[in-house]
Image 1 (cartoon, rainbow, N blue to C red):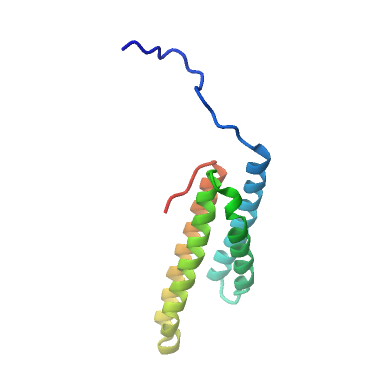
Image 2: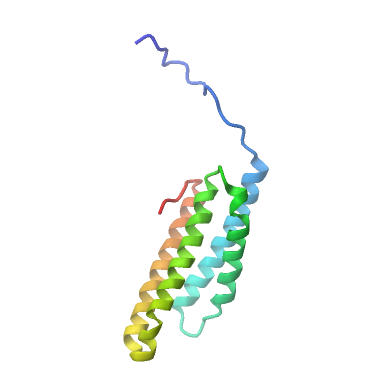
Length: 135
């Protein structure tokens, strides 16, 4: 035990590009707001304008994700892309329920929409705290 623990100065800290982090944060906020609008619209009957906004948000995330590599923002780009792709696949898989029986299709889509809204809200909160998001 010859180590001095009273010295609390950081040994090596990687330089941080604050302009990059601020730009990524702005992009993240825009993307999360678009996702949130889509998620809320999916819960409101007749407000299904969300497909266009979702495609715009997905394109933003897809094109900007490389610039976030090496930062905590990269996890948010992956998280949003995975959320959209997963929700899209689930909507497509449950689409036949609408054709066969209205009620099961409606229930399935409500469950998917609530899940999507939860993921987007959770990610937005984590981003505002400056934390990575996992899963």
